[in-house]
Length: 144
Image (cartoon, rainbow, N blue to C red; front, side, top):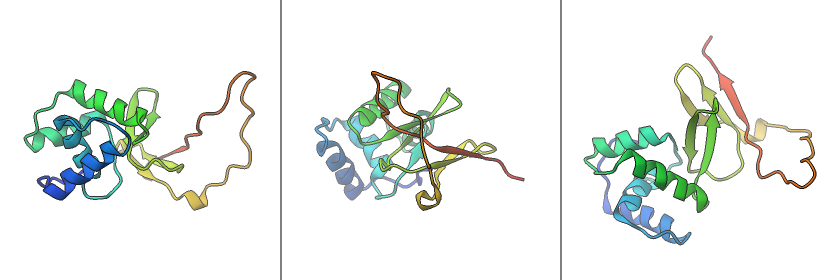
């Protein structure tokens, strides 16, 4: 969840720097979305829809298609990771380090899980002619 405060100069500057460090052109819409995502220095798990809603609540003019395209560009540039839940719902994470996630089924929310408690003893070998690109760990939770 992104706090509903106005973007300030520092948040905008942080968003711009985030883009420039990976060679993405800092367009107005990219900077706005980057500032919403990392402007306060905190990591986020967002959906395209939640980021679109936050931008509109703050009076930013951006289409849902632009949000999707921008999130894809951020992922392609290595600024974010996409985590797919149920094969149909994608979350975007600004924390690009390897770490597991909790998916809270009752709330449709994704949060970080403690990496130091995860132990994977072995994963299968990749089929011939391929390599493992990543391993995503999503632990599904529901309230008792």
